[in-house]
Image 1: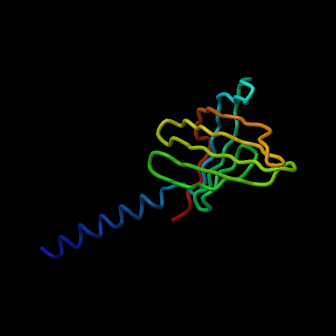
Image 2 (image 1 turned 120 degrees about the vertical axis):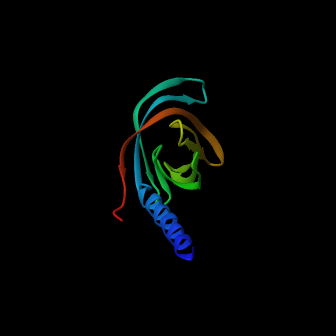
Length: 134
């Protein structure tokens, strides 16, 4: 009986290890959607690239490299606040891992004044995934 329980536990452990190894280290997305500026002007976005690095917990896109703040089976949230173009730019957003929807907002500041905002509403598809060797 003890041998059977040990065999079951070993099987579960190996299955978990394989599931973890199958998680990609990097994921590239191609996104289409809209970008809306604070003035209300909206424009189409075509084939915007987002790169998620799960090893470094970063997401590249929107002109910056953001930190992944939260990662669940359903969502990825990210944010960054960085100097850019003589001021600062902040981006916050999320990726819906189930539907591929991405939402983000970008705020640009200079001299402690908001000089521009943009809101992105995107639908993304995986273009490439790098899975590390076991």
